[in-house]
Length: 251
Image (spheres, rainbow, N blue to C red):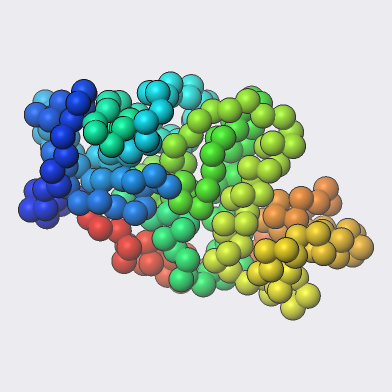
């Protein structure tokens, strides 16, 4: 990761509290950090410089970071918090990649979409098993992560207590965000997935058929049907997805 071009584009901002301006040097705004305004920055420390994200969350009180079970390292952690004239600022390590919202123009194959859903569903299953939800999931807070041990990252996790229905709702948010990037091979299902108001009709169709469904379709339709097997994506399909991510990634 090259930081040279970050130094070339400083962005002035006046701090009224920590983070310390001697440690954080602001750079260009980015759209892919979360739903709130975000800026890339350089954090200087004993181990040298590294890229971080400064996320402006408004005038709210400084939030407490959620203590989430995270064996995959998939949930964003705050390195520092502070305030500036724009409000509360959260500092986290910059992870190269792209959000699902950034990939809106990408057309995934259905097997690639199922594979992507499985990657996001695995860390969520851990916290959902503890009765905890992310609490604020959107397509922009679901990121594909380059150069990381685990390929996805959840941004701005609140760690809200949730029952089984809340966990299913959250999984459906992930499923809908991924379905927006693909088309189902079944001509009866594809238009219903593309229609924002097609959920009820889709659910009725699947229940009427009473066949096993794949995990992604099961989550988006919120149906308790047996799980069908999933066709793995081809290497070329996965490579094409990551090439799109690389094309969006600013560093």
